[in-house]
Every structure is written in structure tokens, then in C-alpha cells.
Image (cartoon, rainbow, N blue to C red; front, top):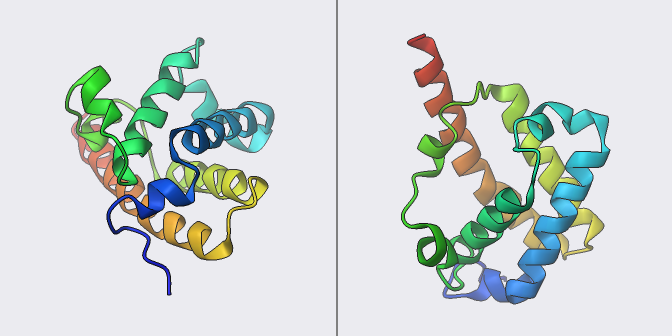
Length: 138
């Protein structure tokens, strides 16, 4: 039985900060090179480094490691940070598919991939709901 989600176990399972950086870099490489992810790729600023840094910092704390996002950028509401985007089920699922492809390419154990995909689906859906609410007012 795995103990992901307890203490810093998930953070350690992905390889700590170095592992998260590799995960984020691979995620952006896949997103930028696959036409399947073009919609969400185009939503990012031309210089993707700040997006990479923010995702790595967020994932560090989210996985139970150091709270780098708060240290570097302050507090954040992930759904509100994405509220300006027209995220629907399509883009939510696109982001999750890109992350699944990343985790599989990095050959993480299936238990870890399954756990992370289940957990990442939660903020992804909250983002979609916030965006839907924001854009239904337009």
C-alpha cells in the first residue's frame, strides 16, 4: 500500500525538487511539441520560463515538499489564477492528458501515476468550474 499524500511522500516519490523540475520541463516539452495540446500551449506567454517556474514551485508545495510558490510568488488561488481563460472540459482534459503523457514518459510507477492523476483532476475541475462561472457572466 502506498502512502502518497502523507507528509512529503509524494514529493519524494517524484524525485524531490530535481524530479519536479524534470517533470515540469518534460510537461512543457510535450505540450509545445504536440499539436494535440496546441490550445493550452498558446495560452501561455511566449517566454514559458515563468510558467515553468510557477508550476514547479506550486507542485513542490502541493506534493508535500517546500512551499516554494508562497516563498517566491506569494499566495495563490489556482482556480482564480486561471479564471481569465476559457477552460472547458476539453481544455481540462487536454491538460490532464499532457500530464499523464509526461508521467508515463518519465516512467513513474503506475501507482504514483494513478494517484497523481486522481489528485490533479481535483484542481483541474475547480479551474474549469471557476472559468465557466467567470465566462458565463460575459
